[in-house]
Length: 180
Image (cartoon, rainbow, N blue to C red; front, side):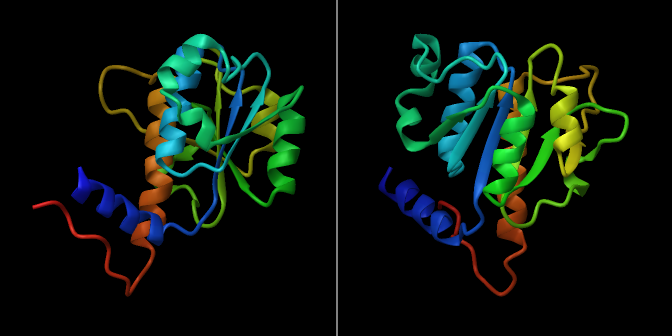
């Protein structure tokens, strides 16, 4: 474990951009807890909550988050529009993850700088107000026979892609070596 902790410290040193999340109507506490744990692992600074999103303090969310909720700041808003305005005021580019007709593949989305990924309700996705406020709407290409992902899995893929892009864009800097 000591070697893994050292590697993670090396990656943390390479991480400069701020990363946030906006959860719009994510109703299942287990999903919120899983998203919180992943958010803490990827260095998310703040999570904006709106709509019917389950509270991070819900017992099921806390159980799934395994105490990582103490590593992330939360801000609740009455609507997706006010949460999106707060994201913009904080200086983040808002990138919605949604299967929509005008969305672009995640691997083609502009993800440089401070990014806030927005994810919506498990059944209905992001609200129209959130999609209208987003700087970019993107989707995760799924070549298999399943057309959508669990919202927590989509959050993990999105956060990993944002960080991967940041790290690979740092030209001239050597990354941490892999484990033997």
